Structures are given as structure tokens and as C-alpha cells.
Length: 446
Image (cartoon, rainbow, N blue to C red; front, side):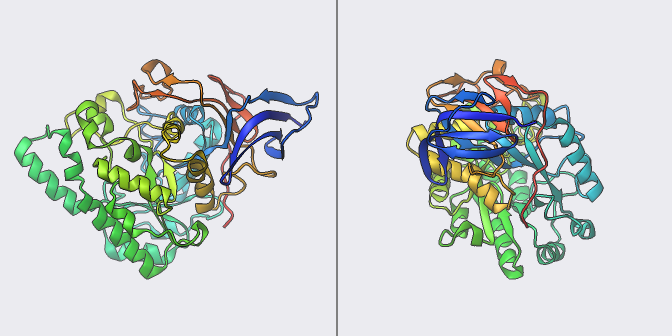
């Protein structure tokens, strides 16, 4: 049976162009894009009334906590929040319990998502000091990539053996995504402040403990190794202006062997916010200075940084409200990432076309995702309608995260996401979810 949906009079944002037009969806696929598509009786018609229509945000770094940490979050709860926030595809990290460091454990996560995920999904395989044989079995057409923790890991996922690291970099052609913070630097800094304050270190010291030096030392080492071995390297969540100098913008993204990501929180908050927000904005890498934030924006806009992401990493309030040394790092972000960036569009910091490039087009290009990330005929209809004249204030009452809190609580955003389509199905419609369908496992054109 053919299902038709017609979106009329939308401001379509795609490939650095915004134009008023219509989009016809046939089943899962974008069938036609035109200035005026005639209505047929069979089609469900949605009048956008000039609202923005963008390709769904592809979030290349989330932690949805399943399996093993489901008191914090589940794939079902967090993908639901993501879809409400305009994220139609996510790539989830391997540091769950158990960790996705074998092919069997990785496939178990895919099975959970097939049953429960409202958004499209893929997962990363986790590298360790001793699982190269398993790592090399990863199917590049079916799995997003390899994740290595070069600092701040859980369990045994810290890859700190340099011979192993070089072997991994030399052995795989898949994208290697890395968390870069130098562990020795962090340990030295932590000891200095615990000697002074005990476990209750003031939060203002977090970006000094997890310092610019720790980030730059690790990032520059990873990049040097990638250049030496020819590995395809993607550096997650840059947090310092200094690191941005390590990346280039003189060639197209498709030709880059080394790419970079920045996350919403590093573009929104600065160390001035620790006094008010406390551990609720404790992330690894740390939110740093306003100067760093400015440097990250500059690099995002001039294409040294290629993609935007959330690093969505929920913990319970009880966990977060511990003293510094016991409060885990990370926070929930998927529900308001798009509206946060749209606030910066309204302020004139970034254009909506550039925002879409970084949230949708570039993740699709970078990971070579098949038929997603663009509003194009023949592509999957992963689409988001946004009313830029409908303000919303973030409160506990309207949060969808299992953890029940957000670092954005009390913030009023100027825009609201009204409709989210996932594979042509209207998955989210003004607060109401489609419980009859689920997202798909994404595939890769490699």
C-alpha cells in the first residue's frame, strides 16, 4: 500500500539554499520537491505556512546507556527525546555495560534499537588494548565506525598502549573517532586540587584540571599518528580554541582524512556558568573559557570544524548532585540541541544554511551514510518542521529524558519543533508520538 504525505509552503533549507516549496513523500522516500505540487485526495497534507523544513539532525555522538545503565536512560526514552528535538539519526557510543567491544555485544545493541528506537541508529565498535582481532571484523557497510578513548574512559576502554594504538590506526580503513584528553596531565592536576580541597573541589577548577594542555597534547598526538599511518581520524568534542589550529579548511570535507566535531554545550556555556550550574555542566572535556567558546565558533564557521553533535550523556540527578570527584561527567542534550542552535541563528551568529550543513549534510558525508542528511528526491524522508515564532521554556514538566533534568532548564528558546518525519513516517506531531513504527538501522556507502 502506498502512503503519500504532502508538505505545502515550507521554507526548505538544503545545500546552502533556502526556498519556498512543497515536498511529496511516498512511503519512506522523498518523491518530489517543487514550488507547487498539486494536492491529490490520497495524500495527507501538512500546511507548513512558511515554517522551516530541514533535513533531520544526524547526531554522531550520543550515550543512550543501554544495556546496563538503564537507571539513567534507555534507547527508547532517549531516542524519543531526540526525535522531539529534531534528531532523526544517532550514532551511539560503546561504553555501556557490557561494553560493545565484541561483534556479538555490538549486535545485541542493534537488536535493542530495532525494537525500541524512534530514530534511525547506528553504533560504534569500541577499541581496547587487546581486541584488535574483533575490531577488524567490523563491517564498514553496517557499522558507523570505531571509537577509541584516549582519555577519560570507563572500564577497560582506555587505549593507552602506544604500540596497540599505532596497530589499530594502521590496520583499519574505517573512521576512528577519538576522545582526546591526556590522562597523565589530568591525574597530576587532580592530585594537586584534591591535596588542597579533598573530594569537594570547587567546580571552577574543572576546566583547569581537564585543561587546555591535556586536550591539546592528546589531540595533537592522535593527529600525528593519523598522518603517520594514513588512518581516517575524527576527533570528537573539541573544547579549546588552541586545538582548532590542528585542522584544515582548504580542501572539501570529502577529501579530508582528519576531521573534527564540536558539541552544543561547548558552544553555549563557558566557565562563567559553573557558579550557577555546578555539576550540571560538568562534562569531559570540560566547558572552558569564553575565549575558547569564541574560537570554537570561529572554527565551525570557517570549516576547520566539520560537524555539530550533542555528546548526550545522561546521569541521574542524585549522581550529578555529588561532590566534584564523585559527580559523573555528562548531561542530556538531544531534546534541545536544534532549538539551541536556532537561537544562535536568530542572534546572527550562524546562518540556518550553515547550521544545517553542520548538523545534517556533513555527518552524512563524513560517515558516508546512504541516502540521508539532505532534502533530495530519492532520499529517505527524515525531515523536521520548525516554527520559529513559537517560543518554549524548558522545564522539568516538558522533558522527555529518563533522568528528568536538563542543563537548559529555565531557558526560553524562540523556536519549537512541530513535526519530525523518520523514514517518511510522521514520528512526532506537536507533542504526540507515533507508536506504530520505529527507526531503521542506517547503512553506509563504503
